[in-house]
Amino acid sequence: MTAHHLLPADMRRLPLPWNDLTPERKLALEELAHTETTEQAALEALAAVLSAPPASPVPRVWSDESWELFDRIRHEAGYRLAQVMPTADRYTREGIADVLREWAGTAQPPVPTWWLDAQLDLIVEVLTNQALEGWAHDVLRWLQQKPYDEAGVAAAAERCVENGLASHDAVNLLHTLGAPHGEQALLRVVQDDRASDSSRSQAREALMWLRRPGYEARARQPQQGEHPLLPPALRDLPHSWASGFQWPAQLPENADNIARARAILEACAPTAPVPDPVPAPSWHSYEGEDEEPPAWLEVRAVLRDFMPYAHLVTEERMTEATRECALLNIPGVPGDPDSEEAAHFARRWVTWISGWIAGEVFSWLGMYVDDDTLVTPWAMELAERYARFGLVPDRAVSMLNWHDTVPSSREALARLAAEGRLPPEDR
Image (cartoon, rainbow, N blue to C red):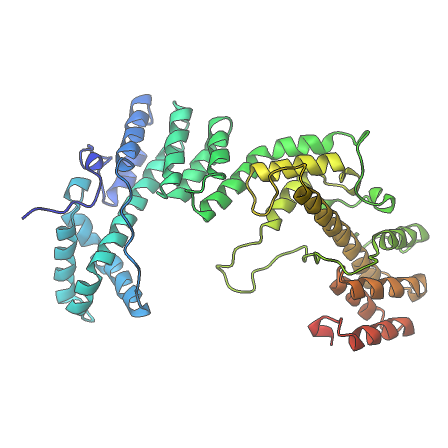
């Protein structure tokens, strides 16, 4: 009977340890000396695995019960699968079927034969993918040692990402390689539609780490002859974006600090409803662990490194940071920095930065300024205005609540409540 091989023909011809599918492979690679010759053998092994196009996935229609049974296969029959098919040339559909039927006949609790027959194609696909993933994981980790052929190693890792083979490990390897070859490959990965969204996101994160010294070097350059984007009252703010523009709790309630707080709030005060509400500065997944972080967090990470203080938020640096975000292919970032879309992008971020700064001012005034006479009535009037027009309304309302012994605060809260503008928790 003809055997149906499941792994690429070139992989089946590899010598040990490169064709090893057992748990012993990891130990064998750990003991294998990293030389120019063995590194080349590893690259040839990866090329062999990638030589065949990936098989078309079988539609997955598994129930919760099916997933539970598959977990049992991995834990109860995994060792036997490795015993029967220890190398790539022996890994066949028939071999898997024989092992599973033998296991099902003695499993406790019993496994129904009809389930194995109905799900065999899907089981074979998943087991084969897991075997390849585990193999590539070990080989890519072995290659993380100091390479002899950085360009060749980077090219192999990039191909793994393109083909969805141990992509996480491949991106980690490119990150370890760094400049120039790893970084150049990562820049291609983030623009490659063949790579998964998670791979591109991981590649962007790696690139930000690799390129951060350049961002920080730009931030150290003095702002000379550049065009500020924030109002004058914000530009001498000593609190950094790295700390979220937070005002220290121990900051004295003196005339200078109160005057600065008032000047900032007046300078940022909205005159119309804000079209792009300012997101909360800290993001948490409330929908479940699998919820993806919003793309604006990646944009903020780049902008914050380019412009860590308010006086550095300039037209020139915003353009440079936008170009960098486009190079990283962050979703929602305009590709043309001279387009109207890019101008809107910059305006939105200026509003958000201003909002975060104003929000921290409201927090300081509410939580740490105990003398109501220092903030009455101007802070209450401004807080009501911010809440009405939707610029950091939660921070503005919180400040009003902190000073709710003041009549003007209670009156502002009552008006906002009547208009339905209070956050749900304050209604």
